[in-house]
Image 1 (spheres, helix red, strand yellow):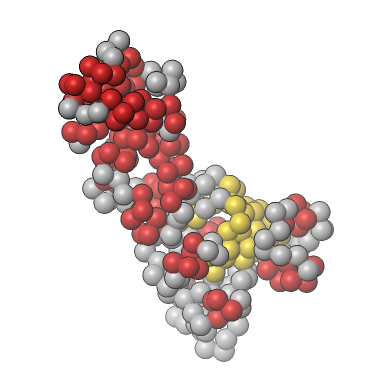
Image 2: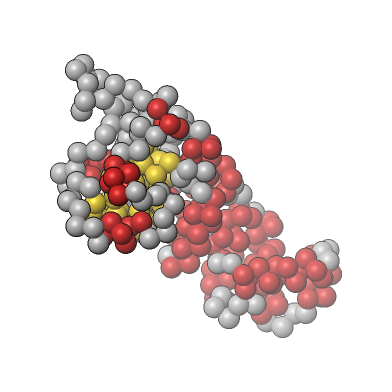
Length: 264
Ligand code: FES
C-alpha cells in the first residue's frame, strides 16, 4: 500500500463515504495496514485474493479520491459527455482533491455522485495563453506544432494576436478576454453556434450544457466554445478565431461584430 495514504486519512474517508463497496475497500486497506493478510481479507469479504491484491495495488497506482469517486458512483464518462472535457482531465481533477480537506473532497464527490454540478463545471482559476488562428496561417505554422506557443512568444506579435490573461472561477473565457480588452468573435453568447469556437492545445476547458459541437469536434479537434467555456486546468493554451475552419462553418450565426443586423 502506498505509504502516502495515511491510515488516519483512510479512517477519515471511511466516515465520509456512503457506498458499501467503498467502505469495504477502505476497511480492507486499513485492516491490511494493521497487519491482516490478503488471504484473510479475501475470506472476510468473500472475494478472491487477486481482487484484494488489486485493491491494494490501486492504492499505489492512483490518488485515493479517484478510487473513492469511482466507487461512490461518479460516472467519469457521463461527466465527460456533460462537460465537454476529456475523461482524463476529469480523472486528474478528482485526483487533485488529494490536496483538499477530506470532508470537503468527500462533499464534492457526493455532489457529483448525485448528479449535482460541482466546482469542476464552475471553472477554476487559470492562466490562459491565446493565439489568433490567422497568425498561424500567415506564418505557415500548424495547429499540431508542438512548440506553437513558443514560436508565437518569439514572434513579436501584438496583444490582439498573442498573449495571456487570468480567468477567475465562474468566468467564461470570452468574458475574461473581453474584460482584458480583447475583441474575440461571438454571436449567441449561449453555446448555440460556433462563432466563438477555440481549439485547446494544452489543458482543458469545460462547457457545461453545450449541445452544438459534435463529439468528434470536441474529442478529435479539442474544440471548445469560449462563451460558455470555463477552464478546468490551471493553465490553458488555446487558438481562437477558428470559426472559419471547415468543421465549424455550418454552425455559424450572424455576428454582432461583423454583420449589419446584430443578434440581440
Ligand atoms: S457565441 Fe455562440 S456559442 Fe459562443
